[in-house]
Image (cartoon, rainbow, N blue to C red; front, top):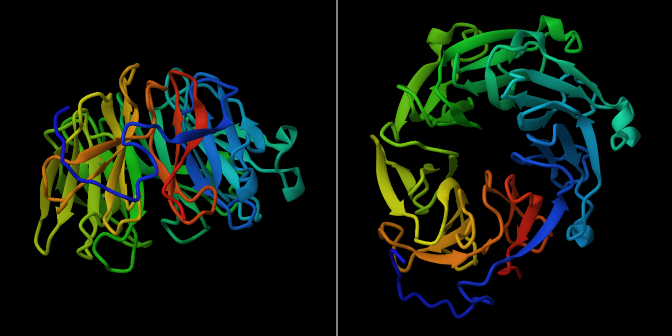
Length: 394
């Protein structure tokens, strides 16, 4: 191991090397590629949208209630598209039913809207869903990730969209009053991109308006940065979206998240590259970079989040990996002994030897026991969509 700190936690119900229990939501297709959450049926529970890249389907999963989360969840195939990299919920036509948009790369290079049934009672009936390509995106770019957000404040939800490779960009889709007229959706490019991994809606400068926090893993503009939302009137002009660099332009940053790792009341950005977690700590005047090496025995870093895993009052780090072929682990968590500024943290097992290519970690109290569990998916060992049960619950 690269490091070991002799920290002892008497409340630990598991040995540090014992994996958490994994509960499968669905593994009936191939290449599950990301989980996006929303409460689509207003029951107060988080539901899931997932694109299956190799399986050629996009699916939605309804949370079955806290007592049934360890079973496979009710599911519906909302559409069949190839090379789906992302799928996200939003009510695009304002009819009160939650639709799905998928972003596709590969030979498809298009985005699709999957219209939900008019009757909420038919949500799980795949024959009632309708899939349409969004013409302004068709065949144009390798679309990677989308973020529903009202941009021009005219007609409801719009979409921040992103891509990779040739013609890679960050931009937004202006959705007209009649959203069902997909041929009228308009694309507004904001800037060039290499390979966008993350789009996060968050107020970065405390002006009351949510900006866009972004990670780009490749190209001359790579790194972690945010685009300042200029307001609805100016949003049409890409020059009004001011870019603010945070760091990481010398690294291949994958997914990012945000939180308050050191509990100083300021926003932190948690990033990851192949070998390290990179903590970008905000101060009054700048962002400071703190590097926390990944331990031996894991794959290459893919995503990282911060929260108090074992409820000891200190925020921890949870990370996922790709290229984690056994005996390497694909998901672990890290704790510090005295201060988060320590370079080397103690690692604790989550995934064990199962899985190879894990995706973005999403913390959520899936079983309602008061702690945060981990939602994720894996696309090489075909573990599908699943959640790890946090063993430190009350």
